[in-house]
Image 1: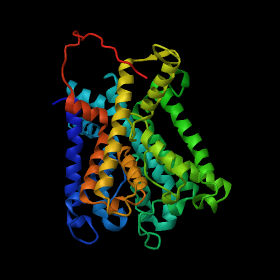
Image 2 (image 1 turned 90 degrees about the vertical axis):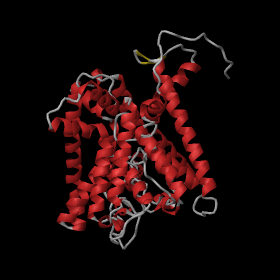
Image 3 (image 1 turned 60 degrees about the vertical axis):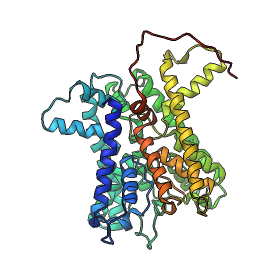
Image 4 (image 1 turned 30 degrees about the vertical axis):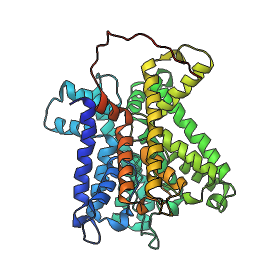
Length: 447
């Protein structure tokens, strides 16, 4: 099998294993087996770090079920091959050349040199950030839930946030309300700042961390990829935060809060669609402007080789620069003192078009299937499919009401979003060709 086929099948294996564990009666409070489809949906959502759920996590699943889910989140966030590497290291085995290729594909790395160093830093960095996040969150959760439960909640949500998963245990905690996420902590700076920061750090990508450390935090020495990711990340936090505050200024979602609290909520709303799935306000009450902005952020997602989903920051950047170069009649796509390879441009446009096509087709199919479901409006269905493809997990409350066929479509969307459209395409259609043989050029009229 090719590298891409092994990666694609690895995630399927983990998803099915997780679904089997969640089907056990011990995994539910009712002591009854969950249907395989709903267990598969939850396992896919956790492994693909999405957050769309057919049941409220805290009220449906027991401690056993919650531990299975958080283990799937951690495994899916760091990547299937990361854990394979850990097993090989524990047994003192050499992963070999083919294994190295898998690691490079899994981490988004283009060079084999320093691969082991990157994965060691990945594990250390993950433990460090998740531990730090859990320590800060425990300050609030211990006050609200006691010592043991507070620490458990802090660790659980820190892992979920860092892996950009969007799963939470807040259902049933406040007056029996379900699917509430962090709405009761909207103005709490400890929770509403720690969670987005964990999301942002996890969404930067492991190669970005490594480059920052290798360059000793000197921006002048950063690789082009690192500079693009950091600049795009800053832009996609500052501008959306301001826009959310502007769009929701007189809307009930923000109207009852002071200016500083609105900025805090706007910051949370700007970060979580890329691609975590938590929320601190009722998103069904959003204005049309905020709804469309959230769709855009979910579609873009985070950085390549990270815990985030979406079409990725660098893909969006390459497409934007390609458009600029066409308008300026430039032959090459230039970024500073560098030129972007043409093959990257083709890959970027392929990912962009394939994701849009998948979203359109899945939205169309679900709208047809759910034509008798009053909750399945076009707005809600489109939001759900973009959330699934971007592995976000934000929802307008549609998922629990969907039929089996619609859930299967969302399962496929979440899987494609996590494994990657390009990886799936290469796994299915990659062929060996003679690179020396090139066909004659044929001209087409464009525009």
